[in-house]
Amino acid sequence: MSGIVIIGAGECGTRAAFALREAGYSGSVVLVGAEPHLPYERPPLSKPASDAVRMKLICAKDGLADAGIDYLKGVSASKLDADAGTVTLSDGRVLAYQKLLLATGARPRRLACPGAERALDFRTHGDAEAIFSRAGVARSTAVIGGGLIGMELASVLRGEGIAVSVIEAAPKTLGRAVPARFAEKLHARHIEEGVDFHLGRGVAAITDDGVILTDGSMVQAQLVISAIGVMPEITLAQDAGLATGNGILTDTHLRTSAANIFAAGDCAAVSQTDGGHIRFESWRNARAQAETAARTMIGSLEPFTAIPWFWSDQYDLSLQVVGLPQPAHQSVVRPLGDGELEFYLDAGRLVAAAGLGIGNAVAKDIKLAEMLIAAGVRPDTAALANANLNLKALLKSARAA
Ligand SMILES: Cc1cc2nc3c(=O)[nH]c(=O)nc-3n(C[C@H](O)[C@H](O)[C@H](O)COP(=O)(O)OP(=O)(O)OC[C@H]3O[C@@H](n4cnc5c(N)ncnc54)[C@H](O)[C@@H]3O)c2cc1C
Image (tube, rainbow, N blue to C red):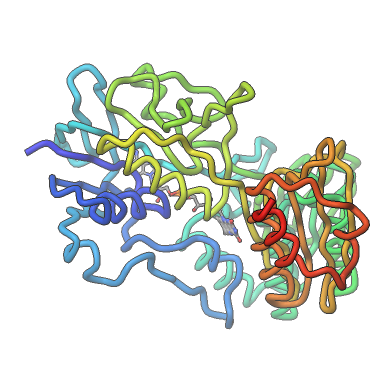
């Protein structure tokens, strides 16, 4: 019996399967996942609590079967025929679908230099096991890429007393997603912790001794990890003739260019009301889009409107960012006991906020900031900067107004 087929059993695909059941869908749900495990969360891979790599499952062991979700583990979808409404799997099976969700996520961007094969990727549980088991015996490591994943990895390795060099082609680390104020603070903390940075230089080659940089200098390392970002996994969609760009293109309801095919999570580039498509790579985005896609597949027509949010843990610091801060926004800084918040206003309207603090110090305020953004407030900037002004009170008065 054909029903809903979901390709990709990561955060997005798995959440979508459960969301279908929660929304009352009683037809068949088949979840196809290339990895050989039960679905697991990726964020804990770069935040191991002890020296063992944690596999945090997305659902209990019997959760999928109990919900009537047919999970095909360790099998990948190799061909999509959008006209026939079928997907061919790597084991030769052909699945017919009424609705198909592509939740194929992203794969690591590859280095193109001589010796690139010596660098380990960091995306899957298998990658994490390979890195941490080898890091334990290596005296020195080089992390190529000073983005969020590379910097989280550096903090974990330093926590274990392992020497870490971070190589970043840009002049600064964390430049892509993190507001400058907090990128600088995190960078300074890494220096305090003893991370050795090589900025503004590319990688010319990787050898048995380490990494040769484009200026000819050598970074000695027994273990090299590549964390230079990811590419959306769009091969299946592209080969089937679906519209793609920096992701599988969807409208605001997560419908792709082909009838009955939807896309969500790291692989999806979603149409924005003000033009263009945006693709997010974050845990909560994957879950939120999964829920919208599930409801859309069974007939609701709500657009995807969630405010972007992500977090990153490095040492004892936690960063949270809600909305999309831009350098052109007006910034208002608010001190906190164990951290700091920064609000971003566009023509007087609160559009984003970020916070960095010890442990959970900023979590409550970022949640309130998210509600303030959703309420469309135009706050008094002096009041916003005043740590004595309660954000809850501001929200209450905004809602009352
Ligand atoms: C180490 C690490 C740490 C992270 N930390 C954070 C964090 O702190 N905060 C945060 O917000 N986000 C974090 N993220 C990002 C977050 O985990 C991702 O945004 C999220 O996992 C995306 O979910 P997804 O289901 O869209 O994609 P994925 O998790 O990539 O899952 C896609 C799945 O589809 C499978 N697949 C692909 N093609 C096929 C096919 N043809 N057939 C069958 N299966 C297929 C893949 O094998 C994969 O299992 C982190 C990511 C990593 C790697």
